[in-house]
Image (cartoon, rainbow, N blue to C red):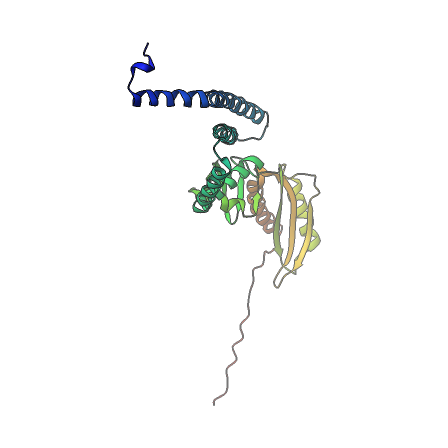
Length: 282
């Protein structure tokens, strides 16, 4: 064992300074390490608890669960680190102010990206649409393929995949054509003013009755919608299952033309008469 009396003056003073520091800050160091370990354990428990709680939410997206759980872990660890620094007498008020200013600067620099992330979280949490839904968001229509934190992938009608920033979708009106199990269709049909309107109404009502995809409830309506310039416009209004919508509308369009023509009805089209008047010699 080395005795302090056998060392030179400079070495002895250095050792005495180290001993004094250990004695003075030893309790704080042990307390800080203990606080850090306990904070780490609590953050882990809370993170797992949040994840289990989110797993019990039926519509919660799998992408959002680890993101929110990790976010809670980071928030707890930030408070733990501030408490550890405060244990050593560090003025954490100034540190928090600096971190806040840095966070504000980063937020301003990445406001577009952060807006996409915030919008992605809202889309994943509130679920205005699900994968496979056909939607129209701000004029962008198609089938939802993937919902991410930054972008949403939509397969548009021509078969291409469109990557749309989440903020664009979230800030636009969203029409979800797949959300409801049923959907209404309206098919306008024009007949000549010389045709039998009541007979046409009966024929078209029978056309709807003969299609099993057309629902009986809500009530079907076949009414004269308007008197056009060259035709009497009859409207077929009924409901069908959302998955049968387009096939039902296309088939009824075809059957309407065939049945009306077979019954002797004419389907007029806009016509214009042009009268040429020859002027006299000037």
